[in-house]
Image 1: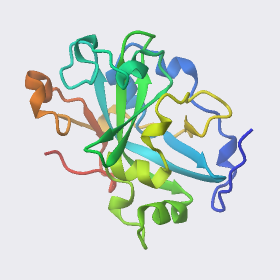
Image 2: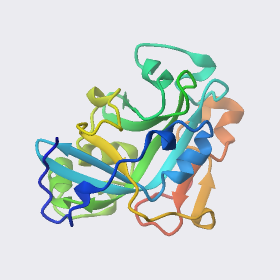
Image 3: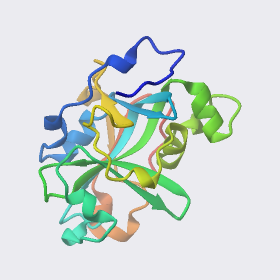
Image 4: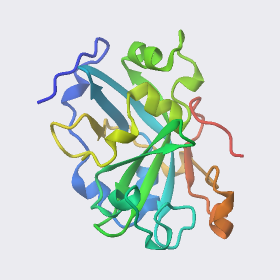
Length: 216
């Protein structure tokens, strides 16, 4: 069992993790939307931290040229994408940013959702220290590289089960659904190389959230 210290939490640590069937659905676009409003929680070195997910992007192999697993390409890095949904896929971008993805779908399907932004929730002081910031401002957790640094997630955590009761990374449903009318869909970021797939409106943001960025 994991023990975490979260001075400003109202015993949220006891909230159940999202179940396996949430992740193993075949419709990755639906999963990406459903992740909005869920909480990404970590516990490293006894420190719990969390944020409410407010921005995601869907990636669907094999036809999606923006996906690392396009055309069912299997490499040591992408192999985890072919696992059954409910695992973390974390990779290093530009040698600097650790980007956290949720593997979805049945085994062999290689679908994933990139978490692009969260709204800080618990233990903001820990997140500020990790980000070397003095005040809670938008760039604390707005952006996929910023949120992983704030929550302590690194590429070495790729492959972790999000279902393991003893695991240090998980997602929770705290009863804050985001309805379809409050979701902004737009093309994904940084995938111009993907041809027509670059125009697919598979980036999803919570309307009115101060923790997301405008569409490019």
